[in-house]
Length: 488
Image: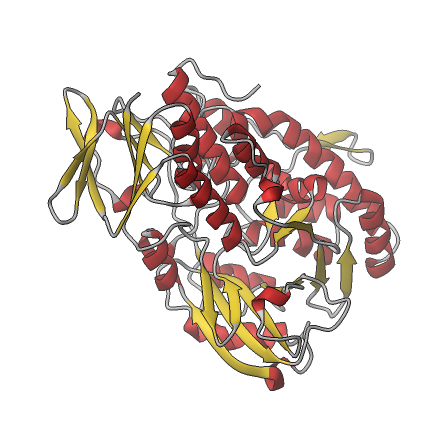
């Protein structure tokens, strides 16, 4: 039995803590704020409740596995999972709309053909087949195994397959999402549909590797899920599982550095000068927020990522029957959106995701509705100047929206930074292959013996399922040692 100090109470860190406690270790989690969950938070006012982080859960099997491996009580016994159907409604720049069913290739093909014209569905369906090939090639090394020592192989190899072109009598391999849209989808609306999966994680489709095709495939293959009461309920369930496994939580404890002794991690130093000894340290926070010994440097490159702006709307009037849980309102000017988010361009309206959960627990009564608008913005920006533009964009999907607003709450990158400690409120994206390794995250082991990394800033990157996977990988490495090669 060893003493393990976990820095941060985010989802990845708590997933690691629960697994390590079950393995017989004495685990203490040190969290600088007064609650758990990292970015998975809730805002409540006047009987309304909103998720302020992720609003939907892809790949719930990750958390089912966590609960199976850490006790006899399955995930469905502690939270209510609801498969969202339709998966999403899309409102494109030209006014075209399409509603896509959840996890149904045939249904998606039919819906796209009816909305965008004959052939559109087949092109998207063919793309999903190629995306599955990329998924099959990258699933284990990017999600189920510790980051390979020769990670450069993942950085250089593009897993998205080339496409034969009869007229050209040769094959052509897309290297970015934008090239997939232009060469293979050949419809600005289909390209916008593809790009929206990148923009949801703050990724620029013009430079994001084609391997990011796995993002829409993951949603298509495994469905989109909601947790009744909001995603905060999932954070609560993981926290309570940790407590039941005798994980100790110390809130209001801001870690500032990892202690080193005799060439290995020896504990944690806090902002008030106090320390806590440990045999193993798991860092579940952004690397920039914590001083580490120089030996802990990782060779994998890291790039800055955008943050998010969330506008919470308390509405008079109930949620109309048949309303889609998620509507994606695509930017009127995609080029201006990308220049504003990733380049020198001025602030411009971007793609806005409108979340309208069918959940009575989030509203004071049936005569009201709780709606969240989410859009990517540059990390470190104020973002408030785009809040009204986000509401205007949402009106394209929700006519008369402004007239129904009782009050609104704007959550900026500064709020994300306050909750997570990430500089500028940056939100990490999932790890992706190719692209010279720009979207790989540092490995779960570090250059300092006894120091491990979990959560969105470590392999396999950001997103709720990826955070849970990072916790599983760290626990495996601590328990089994460097020979651990992931789940079988």
